[in-house]
Image 1 (cartoon, rainbow, N blue to C red):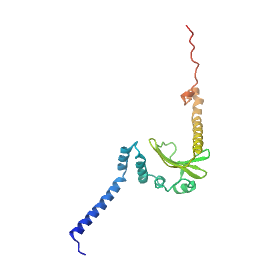
Image 2 (cartoon, rainbow, N blue to C red):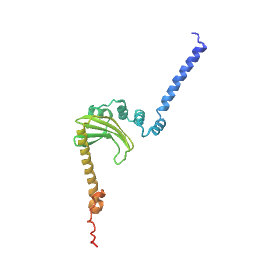
Image 3 (cartoon, rainbow, N blue to C red):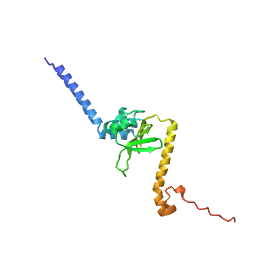
Image 4 (cartoon, helix red, strand yellow):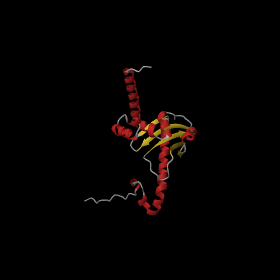
Length: 192
């Protein structure tokens, strides 16, 4: 086959374009490129897209599956646990909240939560201290209200378990909520 200058030139241009696309793809999936993009779109309507981009490239297998929609509303919680577990499971009323398994006593400033009702995933959320993405949520408003009430009751019980030993030692000074301090009667002023 006889190669002409034109054929060689077009082949080199095609190879150059393919090489450029590969380099751009590799650069665009680096942490630096994604964090730079996140700083530029923070607080805009594009923020969720960049977060999904980050999760698709650097997330855990479960987070990547949430972005790809491999995990969907109504899917069996047992199936998800078998594929992506283990999870930390918190039972609140009729609901189970599945979150990332972390060492005890550690703080987390980002993570995910799957809400399970009757063995089926009803909601999936990725969160941080500055943003939140709902992948799906098929809970009715009544179920949401029930879950919120159960969570508030659970957190109040947790606060009381934490405050009770302190109250036994320090008495009324151990109250964690300043609104619940014992209030003294206001002073009375005699009329002049």
